Each structure stands twice: as structure tokens, then as C-alpha cells.
Amino acid sequence: QVQLVESGGGLVQPGGSLRLSCAASGSDFSVFVMGWYRQAPGKERELVAQATSGGRTYYADSVKGRFTISRDNARNTVYLQMNSLKPEDTAVYYCNARLVVDFWGRGTQVTVFS
Image 1 (cartoon, rainbow, N blue to C red):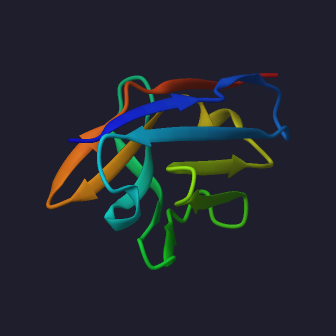
Image 2: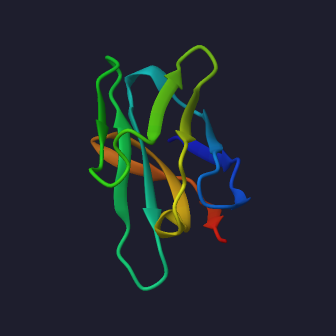
């Protein structure tokens, strides 16, 4: 079992930045593939970024060059640095831990408005 708690969401104007954090507890964090997903109203949940235990990263095309995922295995934490935010980035962002099965946080709201 893994417990995930997100933080760092909020309101920001277009072009602004936010950093999301996800603190994990309950298991060996380092073996999990960690990811960030988002879900906007009326849309399906989508993968935003992912970081493997070996440090490989993946980004959705819509966020490449703007978002950066990183993980600190010593602190059991994964981050998502979001720069140059756009209104279409508005969504609830969920932390995900995957090792055969998926574990999810409760989400944090990110709203980009002008």
C-alpha cells in the first residue's frame, strides 16, 4: 500500500508557474513509477508526466518544454514544476504510483485564469 498526498495547487495567471508536490508513505517509494495525471471538467483523466525508478521521464506533448517532473527518493516525494501555464492546463492534478497496481492521491486543483 502507498499513501499519496498532493500539495501546491492554486490559482495562477497565464504564463505563471506552480510547483506540485506529492508525498508518499507506506512502501518503498524508490521502486515505483511515479506520475502526474490531470482531469479537466468533462474530460478523461490524462497522463501529464511520469518518472521511472531509474530516472527516465515521459511527458505529454501538450506540456513538453513547460513542465518538469522530478523525484527525491530520499524524501519520498515527487514534484511537478509547471511553467508558462495556460488556461487549458486548468484541471485537478493527481499523483500516481504504479507497481503492478495503481495508487492515487486525492488530487489538487490548478486553475489558470486571466
